[in-house]
Amino acid sequence: MKRITEEEVNKLYEEFGTPENVIRHCGAVTRVAQTIAEALNKNGHDLDIGLIRGAGLSHDVARTFDRHWDVMADKLEELGYPDEALIVRRHMLGDEYSDIENVNEQDLIWLGDRLVKEDQYVRIDERFEYIIEKARKIGAEEHVPQILESKAKMKRLLDDIEAVIGQTIDSLFKGA
Image 1 (tube, helix red, strand yellow):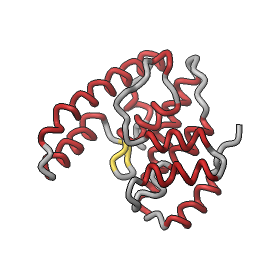
Image 2 (image 1 turned 135 degrees about the horizontal axis):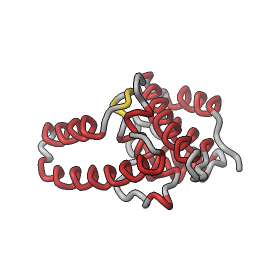
Image 3 (image 1 turned 90 degrees about the vertical axis):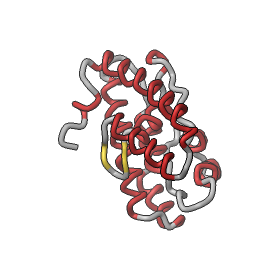
């Protein structure tokens, strides 16, 4: 299966004028998603690390564009990367995680994106406090219950992952 390379993604960063802070964010999301996937793979899963790397590195390439997920997904499809395109197109949804037996590359990108604030790994509570604060600042208090529901779904999957890998997610990123 053909996977987009880091070199190809770097060219897309140039083509789309991706800001440096967004490039760092994409790298951090990729590291988090890949680290969790590798831990799962050591414990019986079979996640495609190349797909996770390509989708993670490219998920926000077009962030300065309206509907950046569709812009980038269209570009990835044009370049012949339909699997990466599907994950990028869906990366903004991120609240219908698979159960642990069926956890997939999309789930890992969602987790990575929600466990990274700017370009740093953060605990789930810190990340969701930030999301809720942002919603409140823009006067979207009515979205808080939905945000908390999304957090609960994510927490269930994180708990299941921790049970499979035999350690906490936070311990994977000590000193990160």
